[in-house]
Length: 387
View 1 (cartoon, rainbow, N blue to C red):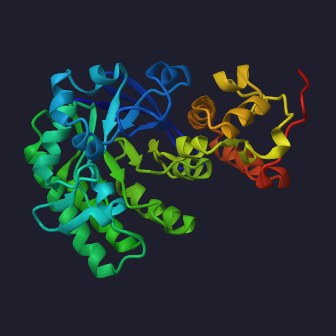
View 2: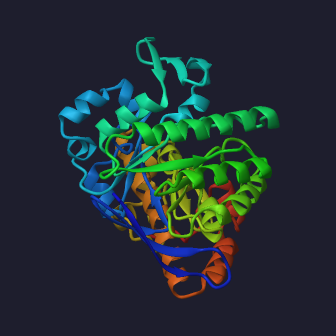
């Protein structure tokens, strides 16, 4: 097996669990948040920044890297790890989410696969389970995802069922086509939209295929948060206890807490860098829009007590200036902070699970999160600190 998952502890009052995932490029302590490097880079950050903020694994995007620079070139470079100069684990998605998010470029979904046009040059492309496996094998990530269809919300029950059954057939074809099973772990992806019976059906089918890990896809695509929680409550207990569980594309702080509470081990999302690029930062009480005028003479850090490089060195006033001046350093500093916020949140969750107090940790999180009018309107939360 290319990976091994050790379950180290479980929380006595919830489904939260502490684990360690061993891969060819090192171990990952779970639960863990994975930064997203769509183009083989996390926005405005170098690999050293990621290790500095505590990231143990990152995600890269199969669809985008296939289009540019091409998986053959990355294979010639020795795979993603050498291409990016990143020596820790890598996970690649399958392109299934782009079937949903880039629907305007899609010309058809069939049993064989998906036809679409490149957003770069308009050239016709075709993704099938076999082509996706060939691309991901060339990219060389430690964990690769089976090809699936991410269904938009809302979906009709009949379409969602036909789609999940096709996703299961695609997953079986991925297992057959996977050329490096002793080096790369192939995860199956549970689908089924927001229908409990379909989630159960999809989970059962994929467990029968015996993957080394399982992802839950098709959530955080517009459905209410209550629906996401319900689908996790239905799905997670059906997945093998001794395999890692990955909730795809989910990364808001409250969603991490709720996913961990229900037994999820791995998360990813572009949210922290998307927010950071526009000068919005995560703090324990919510989100702050740092370019607001209220921060113009605020000499304190983005978050009091934060251990990230940004908060240890720079003031809100300076970062606001950078954002207002459209300087790339502003987004970079915000991204470092936001990613560290989520990675640290997972670290704190792990410590709480190890101590058998995750439920109390969850309650304490919500006692602060979005709890103050200042946080909701983007004004300073901490007192001003003069230089």
